[in-house]
Each structure stands twice: as structure tokens, then as C-alpha cells.
Amino acid sequence: MQQDDLTEQDGDGAAAASPWTNRTWLYLSILVVVELSAAFETGMILPAIPTLIRHFGDPIGVGWLVTSYLLASAACAALCGRLGDIFGRKLLLVIVLVVMTIGSLISGMSDSLFMVIVGRTLQGIAGAALPLCLGIARQILPARSVPIAVGVLAGTASIGAGSGFVIGAIIVDHISWQSLFTYSAMLSAAGTLLVFVFMRRIETPTKSGGQTIDWVGGTLFVPALVGILLALTDALRIGVTSPLNLAMLVGSIMLLIIWVRYELRHPNPLLDMRLFMRREVLLANGAMAFSALGAFQLTQVLSMLMQQPAWTMVGLGATATMFGLLKIPGYIAGFIGASVNGILASRLSPRTALIISGTALSAPMGVMAFYHGAFWPLLCFATIAQMGVSMVYAGVPNVILSAVPSSKASESAGLGSVVRAGFQAIGSQLVMVTLMSAQIFAPDGSTKFPSAGAYNLTLGMLFAFSVAAIVMSLLLPRHRAGVSAPEHVKSGV
Image 1: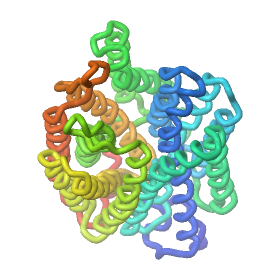
Image 2: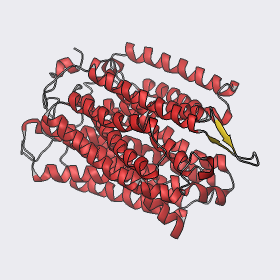
Image 3: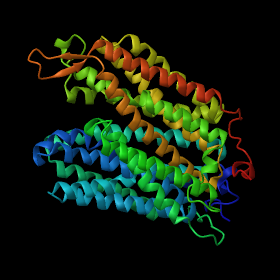
Image 4: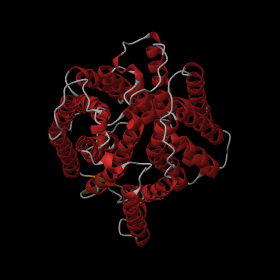
């Protein structure tokens, strides 16, 4: 086999002991472009929401442009990750990029809100891009270099989402909202072309040994996950105790329990829950869950705090555009932080890197919980916290990838994305309920805002969750950098 023929071999990749080559650098650069395209679609719609509400006159319907994307993203992250492990990650990545392009074109060429939502739902398959990219990185790179690549890709997600927000605002303000989807279609089409043309040699799909694919497991998983996330994201709009919402939540949880029991009994499950229950994977996802409940909600809280009118004696009176521009240093710091986590994981260990990352995240969160009344200090601490968020975002996949077989790398990363999405949805509702626990009313009584006490309580809650994430990290078993468990141990054999 030629050195550049990077096919999967012996479970941990043919490149496991190979040095970095020009082709390896090329592949990593292409993966960065792909993840940039996928992350761009996450942030691009947010600045367009007011314009779309004015255009269509349907605030609830426009809200589904965000909800449908997030639901599709969470479901596709796990399913496409596993299908990539089975049929080939490059093939699935091309399919993901093609569907992203089609979704962008449908939304950009439609003047019907329903069709724009349909296209936006198809765009949601972008959630599968990062798990597939992480699986490819695990496959083609030397073991000690994988954490660095994971850090770069996670940092790219921060830059991509940030650029989507900023560039999206510019396009919507100066061209049109349709052009936003045209631009995203061009990005994903470019990614498709790069993967298809330059990554021909990358992999041999994992063989299933003649075993049938567990399509039933995949079919049960999607409605269970979507139902739970939908009930959580719509809880405040339709009422937490609404019979419809409770019925959806309870029914979806019951279906999820049935799915877990089915997968545990299946000889060849599509999503291996036994792997998910391994100590390293479970604790790493626990750290991600607490981070998603806590620090990952910081943007939502700061957006409200900074834009709240100054007459409330709590808010800082910034405009939405100003807040978006002030987030740029945070996105840059996020890219740096994720890359630093990769270097730390490579030189020390993924566990140590995650502990350091959690500490870097919790420290500014603790300060902001008690001091958030001045604009520039708040911005500085928020920027540091954003760096910590990206460090954790990179640190959790690094722990997981070091603990699972290469043949299930994308599946495991995809399940991690589901954990993040689910607990972010829960955290979002917790934040809104906590912020509304104490309110300030406008003089005419028409508008109400969170009080200083509500912000103190909310930021304190986020800080507590961040500390809990560090505890999860400390419970991880110790491993040396670049050393992973043998394949039979990872597989639970």
C-alpha cells in the first residue's frame, strides 16, 4: 500500500504510525472548509429573523426556521455518523454536502414560508458534518495528531458560526434574505467539489460482515429524539404544563426507552448504547451535558443583558448589531481555545486538557456571576468564557475518540452532538424560566425585563453547571497522550 493511500486498516487507521504528509494536510484543509460551510449555516439565519418576520408576517412560522434546523441537525448527527462508519465517511460527507446545497437552493428560490422551512430542514443535515469530519481525522492522522485536528475542526465551528452571524447580517441588510441562502449554497457546493475531487483515496468502508443494518433502530430513534427536543424547545411558547406538550414529552421518552431496550438486545445495533455506557464516553458526555446546560447558554443571557434598556438600571443598552460585532473577538478566541485544547490533549492527555478547558471556562463564569454591571469588563470576561466554551467543545470529542474504536468514531461523535443538542434545549428553557423569576416592568406596564437578581441567579446557575462539568472531567480515568485502549477493550469485548 502506498503511503498516501489512506485507507482504514486494523481499526485505528493506516496513518496511525505515519508522519504528516502533503496529502494529509490537504485532507485536513478540505475538512476545515467543509466544517466552515456547515457551521456557517448554523449562525446565518439568526440576523435574518426580524427581516423574515416582516416579510412573511408570521413570527411563529419564522421561528421554525431555527427549530426545524436544530431538530434535523441533532437527528442526522447520530444517524449519519453511524452510517458513515458503515458505508464510508467520505461517501456520507458528500451526500450531506449535496443535501445541504439542495436545501439552500430550495429556501433561496422560494417565496413560500413553508418551502423555506423545508429547505432549512434539509440544511439541518449539516449537523452530521462535524462527526464525519472527526471520524475521517481519526482515520487518516497519527494518533498523537488527532487531538490537534479535533481542536482545529472544533475551532472552525466557532469561526463558521460567527461568520454566519456577521456575514448573514451584512447580506440581509445590503442585498436580500434570499442571497443568504445563495451564499450558503455556494459554500456547500464548493465543499462537495473539494471532497469529491481530492479525497478519492481516503477510505475503505467498514464491512458489516454480512449482518443486516438495524434500520428499525434508526427509525425508532428519530421520532423519539425529535419529540423530546420539540417538547423542550416549545415548552415556554405553548406552556410547560400544557397537556399537548406533556403528552409529547412523555410519549417521546417512552419511545426512547423502548428504543434503548431494542438496541441493547440487537446483535448489530445501528447506535451502540453499550459503547455509550463506557466510563470514558459516559463521563465525557456528562461534562458536555453540564456545559450545555450552563456555559453554552451564555450568549443567550448576555444578548438579553447587553440589549436590555439602560433605564432598567440592569441592562447596558446595546443594539443587536453592536452585540453581533462585539461577539467577533469571542469567535476568534474560540478558535484559538479549541486549537489550544488539541495541543494540550496531544502533549498531555485528553483528560488533562478537558480539566484545563473546564477551568478556563468556569473561572470567567464565576466572575460574571457576581460582577456584570460594566460593559468592557463584561465583554472581556465573556470573550475568555467563549474561549473556554470552544475548548470544552473540542475537549469532549478528544476524550471520546481516544476511548472508542476507529470503526465507530463518527457514531460516537454524533451521539455526543445529540447530548449537546438535548441539554442545550433544556438549558435554554431553564435560563428563560430563571430570568423571568424576578422582573422589572416598563412605566406603561407593556414590557417586562429580568431584574438584577434574576441575572445574578441565572449566571450563578450557569457557573454551578460549569463546575459540575469539571467534576465529570476529574472522574475520567488517566491515560497518556497519544495512547488509546486496544481495539478489543474499546469494543467492550
